[in-house]
Image (cartoon, rainbow, N blue to C red):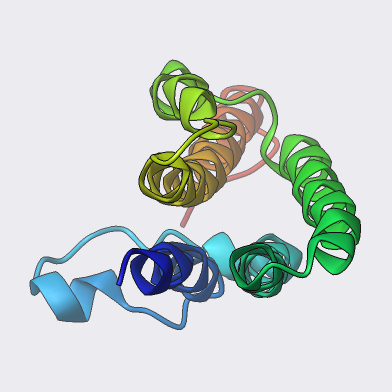
Length: 164
């Protein structure tokens, strides 16, 4: 029971990855009209999140079933994909906002928690870190919108660009 729940907690990576690829339409689900987030502008954000989920499921399955040698190797793969993803998010989305850090930093406490509660506590890491992927991607969208708006205002004030 607990082991299955722990493995299923990786679903958050799959949901986040699909959202970042714009495969999950929040407007249709909530029936609220919102600005399009265009997080799929960089599809590798979603693909890396999905890859993290796949690697995490395989790693934690080996960890739970007791194949320690394979699990140890996959631990390095899991962390390598996670770190690579973080660097790519930083490159494409910039420095995370306070909101994103408020999700991510406390989530780090759930990353490595020894003992019998590890499956429960680490499941919280899966939720928190997958939430960070969405928040950070939306930070990048906000920065891009501000940059475009600022550039258009500057061009308009210089008479370079007339908006018709």
